[in-house]
Image (cartoon, rainbow, N blue to C red; front, side, top):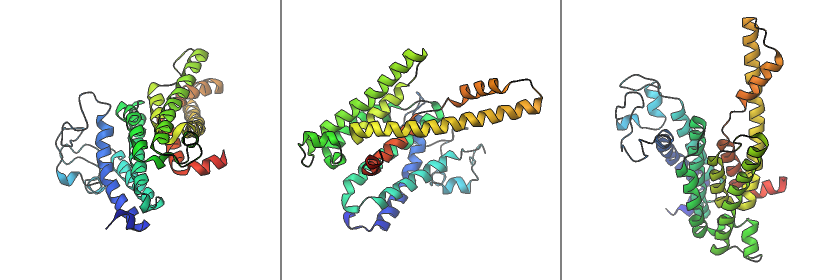
Length: 304
C-alpha cells in the first residue's frame, strides 16, 4: 500500500512500532557519543555497560526485555537504568504522535519531522548526562539542514525569509536553501552574541558552544524567525525549571539545617541553592522550543 493512502491511525501505529525500535538504537547513541573510545557502529553488538557482555537478540527487544529481566543484566545482575525503556517509549510515542498529526500525503514533511525529533531526543539525553551536545547532532544538523531544505522546500513554506526571496510566491528550492542558511546564521549568531555579552558582564562563560551549534542546526530546519522563537521558548521554560530547581535545593538545605540544628542562615541557604540550582543543561529546552516551532509555527506566531 502507498504510504499516502494510510489512515492516520494506521500511520501512527506503524510509526510508533518503528519508533520503539529506533529508540533502542538511540540508547546506544546516547551512551556512546560522549565516549571517545566508542562509536555508534563499533563495536557492532550492544553490550552491558557493567560487565561488557555482548547482549543476545532477546535482550534487545524494546521495553519488553527490560521488563522481563526486571531491569537487570542477565550476566552480572547489575541494574539497567530506567532511562533505557524511557527513551524507547518516548521515541515510540513521539513517532506515533507525528504520524497522527502529519497527513499521510505529506510524507516528506513527516520524514523531516521524524529526523529532527529523533536527533533532538539524542541531544537532550546526552546533555542531561554530560552537559554537552554531540557534534554529530549539532554540526551534523547544520550540514544536513540545507540538503533537506533543498529536497523538501515545503519545510520553509511559512518562513518569512523564504517568502521574501520568492517575492511573495510559493518558496522553491532556492528560497528554502536561503532560509535554511539564514536560520543557521541567526540561530548560532544570536547565542554567540548572548554568550559574549554574558561573559563580559559576569566575567565567566555564559553560553556553551554546544548550545550555539544546536540552535544553529535547529535554525537550518525552522528558519531565522523560528530559531528566535525557539530560543524565547527555551529561555522561558528553562527559567521556570531553574527557579523550581533553586526552590528544591533551598527546601532540601533548610530541612538538613533543621535536622542538624545548624546555624546556617536562610540567606546563606538561598545563596547555596542558587549556585546549585542554576547548573542546568540548556540543550533540552532548546530542543523543546525547536520541536514546538517545527510543529506549531503558525500558532506560535499568533501567540507572539
